[in-house]
Figure 1 (cartoon, rainbow over the protein chains, first blue to last red):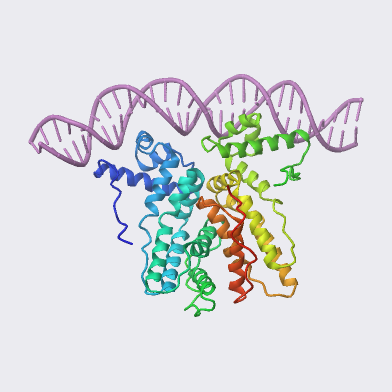
Figure 2: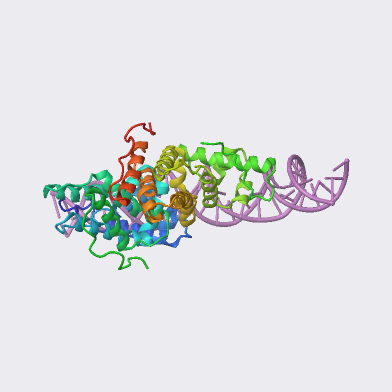
Length: 206
Length: 206
DNA sequence: CAAACCTCGCAGTGATCATTGCGTTAGCGG
DNA sequence: CCGCTAACGCAATGATCACTGCGAGGTTTG
């Protein structure tokens, strides 16, 4: 996968002030999401960002689009696809990084709010490029001439538990548990594989 | 889906009118959730239900609590824990029923909205009694004197993919795919188990 | 059957929200 | 350095929302 750091140049004038306003509004949304008691409405966001509400209305139009925008820029180019040389290593690194990312209460609140108000489009924004990143890892393994699980299977075994546990439960996402997910996927695919290196330690959550 | 007239004994007066108002408000929430364009605010819900907004404000207080209430009564006692005699049969039946349930766009919209506005409590309401139902299935297998996967492992292998695919993607939830989830869980636990009966047919989604 | 209590409907009120038109300011190119 | 255009701030307006006493209707209990 080539560098995903392509900047968002969809704006016709990405100059200093526009970018500053954009960043301030994004940060205000993230801040208000953590408060859990704030209303997350456009005037509140604007006031928190030190911007006029009119600007937010004109640039984004609604809370749904604003959340989708924040989620998109939050989940794009955030996790670098690792290249450790082995499929297990790549997946362990990837799952661990994703677990660490989803541990952040700010990120979690953003995901929940975006799903709730953004509907189908918001859900897609929350998925981000996870599917492509996983596919890149799997294709790299295939390029090594080895057997690889399907993308669907990998999604069910890695992505789904991470997202489910983060969004629906309040259990901590530990790196040891993430490693176990990889182990179960690989042992299922290869019949009986090598044991995991070292699991069940180094908590990521508080 | 059985009738939604499950008597809620939590009310101090489950008499005719209160129950009727409650059902009307719940149905209005479900209806408005499918519209995707409606605002889902308390006056709108009340108007849709043919009830005065005051009643909704007094009984529920906020949209979050109302959604949590609807989700709770929607996801309680809805899926009957099957008893087919084998762990595989129980899990296949359970996963298939859950997949069929999550296919409903109304249910899906309810889950998304409840997560978004209800926060941690809303997420718990969406999980419902799924964890206990799964634990019951596993304990029954243990009572048969056989090895059983842990609840955590079963949640990761069955519940998480179902919820993830339903909430975050728009791929269809087929019963064949649900059967495959069970097969992967059991073959992983037992080293090399019997092959699944017949997978990958009988679509549940459109 | 009647009294007591709970629930709902009604009208009114303050607050917040969403939207619009206009003037000003800041970035960008000649 | 100067004009041009886009983006922002400001003020005003109509609409909707959240909330509160008060009275009427229905439900339960003795």
